[in-house]
Length: 252
Image (cartoon, rainbow, N blue to C red; front, side, top):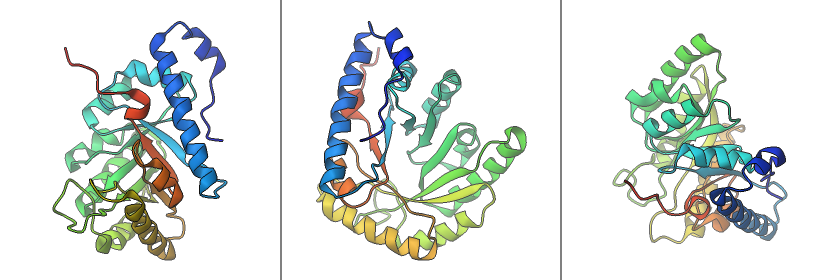
């Protein structure tokens, strides 16, 4: 079963909260989908669920933690930094999954357990410097690093992701940097593409990476619309947002 434990005492204190009840229902529904996909794939190693809370308030993260969620994903540094700073009393691992500009590395190093969108050498350099500085100041743990790889046929002409041909160069750079741990790969199925074909391609890229870097076995793939395909092809981390949080809150 997926680890969506229920933090009984905290959940009881929120039992009258209608939003918590909705989140609990949606978490249960997604958990059942994951369990079914794991069984269908013949796996006994359920993937880690990262709940993506972009555009949703910090109070939703607190509610999710009370429902047993341990991993939160954010796409924008400003939003992630603000939420994490206001939730220091909550036991959450923060994952940065959006495109990262080098000048945001110092901020991300203060809260992120992982960065899953590394696609350029400049980002590796910036993160290495930022993590070294932060470790000196706070003794934080090493940063888990995922290389975002493009599954598009025209790598580079889209919103992010390194070409498969560039993965090994980035992997070697990460592995040689103090404070950075090479975890594996992250990818998004291209819009309009067959997700099974996309994630099968990703599994092949991962196999090639592991042949050189055996510990880099993580695969972050699969979102609300295609998690079953991701599980089938070996995803170790799923990034689920809308099927748990719902649509983006209205502004104003």
